[in-house]
Length: 334
Image (cartoon, rainbow, N blue to C red; front, top):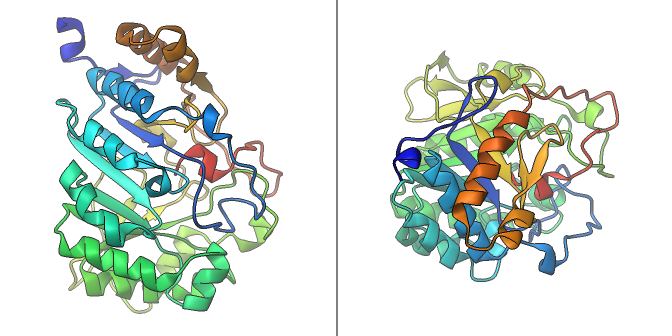
């Protein structure tokens, strides 16, 4: 056991992989226009990893030095019996941080069980504060229920709540100040995200709606003073403190400020593919391994170790071209 006690996952570019994002479903109760097409074909449920298999893979990662696990989807909280998974992962002795990304639709009822299971941080996707616009962007979402869920989670004193907003030109770019003020009022942070060009979508031309982090920052500086910080949450955000508030603004910029050189994460899809890069197709099927060698955690760990050799240096997104990545964001896992 000594071999694994202080083990680290290091890729061939000497990056320390200590963070895994695990998708538990590609399904969602929203249909956000930038995330999926309106008539999505979802993975047959029989092809998904079981919750027990996901917990087993999470255990293997923590024994390999992974300290942070984020549960994503689709919308993770709509998967049946998913709270059992949170409870099981929350008990892993080597895990330092269990987090979730959610659309907030189920937080009103599930925020307390998530806290009880050991979730410390919640990221909530929120792209508009206008009910009609919110429904248009999400196609099905109810803004009031999401805000109620955010306020419920706030009342429970999680270590951190954060808003994530995908900003699109002529869709919601005029709301960045309102969204920041929403975060300031609640004393939470907010990150603005440039749209990821994953999958074929039918609602808009990605090149036309692209709105860069630099443009958002310029908009915000009309009403707020932003001071750069050295803060890192182990992710790709560049953070700025908003003067005279408790809120920080993050910018996640896969196009304008490529962040691959510090990449510290891998992703597990709901089907059990280990994705080594968000913007490339390098992957390994962990489902195949755990079903061929059930219960053999050493075999699984060995496959994960070897997968680090094919983790690419980075992605190169080009909005003027058709996506070379045909999986949608809901399949990729947040």
